[in-house]
Length: 477
Image 1 (cartoon, rainbow, N blue to C red):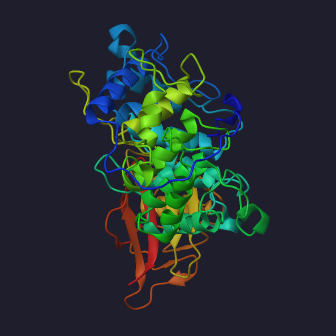
Image 2 (tube, rainbow, N blue to C red):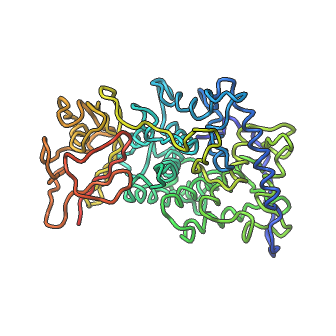
Image 3 (cartoon, rainbow, N blue to C red):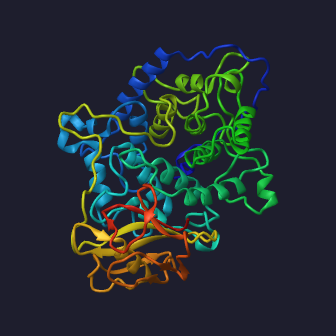
């Protein structure tokens, strides 16, 4: 997720103080429309001859989030008009391979893929019979530090978990993860907010020195977006403080944010995307300077036209692919992902995804177990389905490591992290789940299940579970 290795350090520039604000923004709708059109043209030029944007290492797959924000469907992006090599299909094929992302993946690999798959019109939980990016992310839950994903020291893994799990919704627009999980992440986001109102890439929670350290423009944009996609309103105190931090870094003469790396397009793009995700207009109020400039003005000024690419530094003489992606996504009004547009290619659907399990093909499912005590358990459950669908009982059995021979819809199984499910009653067959992890139904407090964000209903072993379903089980009235 970090672009730092790809960016050239620039001398820090001092921020100018703000005074009375003019009444109107300077970037007009026509200018923004032109920027979007030319920006899309440039990003299309980045497509390889085989139709790809993504490859090994740091690649251009973030282009899908920028395309979607600008109103272009990834399936419509083709090399030389060859629809068989459209960007979405090629990306799906890459994510489906067993060797992707690498032999030593990190959580941000899956978070980046989930955000961009969603923007490309590819259900991130149903990439293929074996690839479920949501379940992949769940596997990095930190049991000993609930709410963190991946090592807590690398805080951006938790920020992008919130963005992916809250932003990459189902094809019908439903948030697929339970609010209890989103709340656990929000708690960690709040605990890592620095005293100046912003955030940085590293962990600050519990460390007064780090909390007092200067924040980063980029991560402040990402973290405030993470709060908002997790259900926090933009009137919340922590979002307001983040907004004030960004305001304090505005350069009055250009509308740029003065970042740690100096004034640059990438940092400004991330900050504007954070404002966009929170429904905060980056062209009015606090973000219109005394000299009539806004962050959007700065970004458009960084764009070469008619070529459409954005430069990283104001002094650069050629465009940067990363700056062009970050700049276009922000100017187009996008956060860190966007709902895919309806394609213009004849017969191409807005969404694609695996429709059923493939019997005998190992897969993963995302599971949360909430016993009402505040001890939320989160895991990625690995199992091998024996048919086109499976059952809740088979998933719970697999999570305990006792998947058996497949009589309940799956064979074998394990959970990462372990301990997600220790025992389930009944332990086989069908019937209502009466006890889970030692907590039994008691009067009106019973075990209920939600699939992909649906309303909670009585949890029964025979409850049908399909490929890519995100499963939330909870105890309560």
